[in-house]
Image 1 (cartoon, one colour):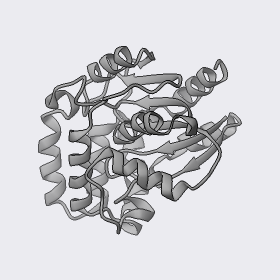
Image 2: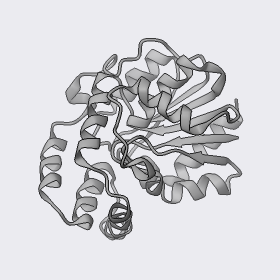
Image 3: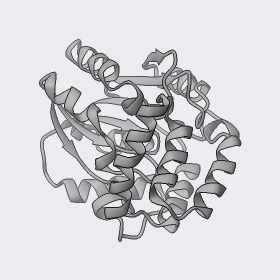
Image 4: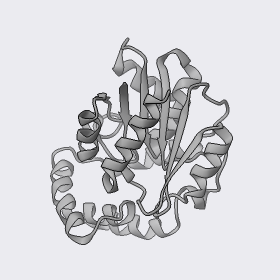
Length: 243
């Protein structure tokens, strides 16, 4: 199976970590695109709507063959909109810890506790400290694993820093997104009960709205591909093979 992978708020291709290797070891073909404002696209102005982000990604992807989409958080909103507008291009969707204003309240889509972390983040200049705060909010890694990942991803941040204005514009696009029409392709919605950034109820309601299969991890955090890459890859490949 061929998959296009989309990351979330302020994240880039370099943050897929071992999850990428897990999928490749299971025989999946992968392609990657950074969202506007992140990674290789960090210098570009971020569109203020999910629809515009879809058009941006399509233009950069070019006339490639139809693909499945694996997407986390903000990437999941883009993944939900893409097959509604261009159904022939998307074969199936895996949406991980995402949400829309159609199914959740603002405080469910972004936890109030995350606002304090965001403030500390903005006041901190050190890359490794920024990554440590981010990982404490978005993952449930143990201390040593978290420290090691923070060091690794601090290097990514240093090489390809994301501007605060870009993250803010991504947040605006996410806040405005509503699920107006439903994709017709098969959909798997994945949620983590240990998610401290987005309330897991968002994924439950989203799955019901979509008529999609709901898969639950009992302890993973928001960034499930970092917390449980082997588990997530195996579940996705199994689900995709059955369809």
